[in-house]
Picture 1 (tube, rainbow, N blue to C red):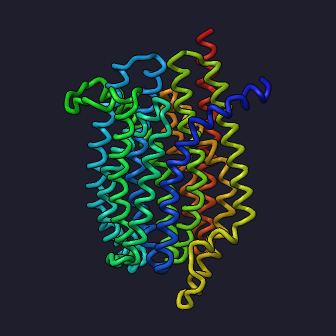
Picture 2 (cartoon, helix red, strand yellow):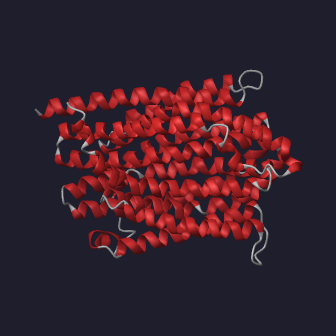
Picture 3 (tube, rainbow, N blue to C red):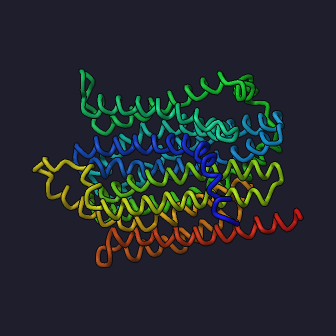
Length: 458
């Protein structure tokens, strides 16, 4: 097949993916602003936000991963023009997301004492706990938002979650500025102020997305007159069968990055702060791949509904190619600017913390070299995973992600990440090993499934 058969899909891929990318980049950009603002307070505060967010990332991965079950069901129902099936999938998905949000909040709230058992720097733990108290509550509106977002994506209405995210980000940045530093008569609350900003912005985000969807003809009937407690056991089971493995896939990946935060903490507060910088920068580029992954899930889900399997494979490959081109571009940027990007996060005019800040930048610049290399494998694995979710194939990919991250990646991070081996850089070599293994195995799975579907359809 000629290259043009793939590149001609780029325009529509971009139309679907760009709003998702921008919305997700918005989340990460707020984290970027948070880190810059908090970084001005000191490396201990930056490490505390990193430690607190490591607990949040695990909970969020379960909630966001679970909610992805809604998108392929809606996409399939939409292409088949089956409103009743679509509304049922949305209602039950939203109900389960709400319950899960409450459970995840309780989980994070009651696991805080684990910080003292993890051999993290004591000053970092004592700063992280009050921050986490508030941020944990924001899990409830965040996971409810995800239910609405995945539904909206499934209808190919990817712009509206982006608009809600942009509004939430503006609110978050303003509140952070006012409450972290105590500007315009507001109390100076340090990193707790950042937590208040996050909570308020996530509540606004849910309300605004619902308000937008209620006003659109295509989605209005779905999001109004929801009989929330009139439930169908079969649909709940179907969503849980799709959602639980998807949640575990995202959990296995996020958990290894979280383990990197904890392993960095064993090396000290400066390696932990450096890890946070490199993680924040690489997560911004990952959101571009995530946007394409959602487009992959939608388009593959649509083609599955139409039983057009040859087209499904061609469209999926067009998305894989797009992701690869973006990944190579980001890898080049990280290679060229690895010494400059970490300097954005620290204040070199702060003479009292100059030695700490210099060490943090030195470590982070080395980590960006590893991050540059894994751009390609990270992009491929998340795009193929999106395509597999569009096919509603979730169980084998869950096993693949577990093997890749925890039987390959984590042991490498643990062994090479010790102070007397490669330290922080060794931890990131483990991340690279896990992501590369996942990319290869998931691609083999997708290749096998699609060829099988094409043969069975002929």
